[in-house]
Amino acid sequence: MANKITEYFNEHPIQKQMWLGSIYGALVRAMATPLTNWNNLVLRLHQRGKSTKFQKKHLFNPSMMDGATGNAISAIPTYTAAFGLRTLFKEYYTPGTWSEFVGVFMAGMAAGVLSTPFELLVQARLETKSTSTRKTLTTVILSNTPQALLRGANIIAFREGAWLTSYMAMLPLISGELQKQGLGKVESDAGSAVISGGTFGFFTAWVNTMRFERQSHAATPSCPPPYPLIVKKLWIKDGVMGFFKGAVPRSVHTSFTAFALNALINSRPEP
Image 1: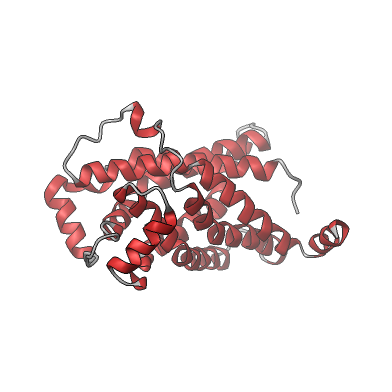
Image 2: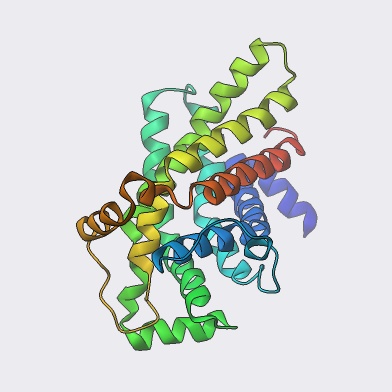
């Protein structure tokens, strides 16, 4: 049986990379759960008008791994698409073309919609301090409707499309520039992962803040606030800085994710 599976994947490199993507993505996203919870906590504190200054308990606490399963599942669509497309474009298209950028962005958007319910449940579980994702799911559906699970799908789709494009398109470009400066491929890939991941996390922090506001209170009877109202609320409260309150934890999260994925990729030979 094992030999048949190995033979199949050797003959179908795209499918092989899609499986690896789902496994690697789920593993890394689960490992990053404390960073996800830290980011959500900072946004929640800001929402309530409390201090967001870093405290050790924000990151290290008994519930630091709460939501790991949901995080892992939410990563599967994005990284299945990422690894599959990475191989597809390498096999059939010239890297760096517009077709690659557009295709990757669209795939990221589709993956973002699929991951939306799981991100919402992670946030709702934090808000309600629930000990069970299943109970949180039941609460969300009974408090509203099953459609509530898709709150924020459009902005998450945009975020994941941008992330996938950054990860797949920008990372190789930065790595190539670093290699021109004399760094080895492994060091260049690692450095470009941290740079591209951190930069992406910082400059798209506003997207994640909007996502958080849109998905808030899903476990209680409520209507999601429209995006113009969210923008107005954040602007009145803190101006531009209101959109970037979670920029630091978000940047750390995306840097770690890119670095860890890069390490896993480089631990295996190219397809």
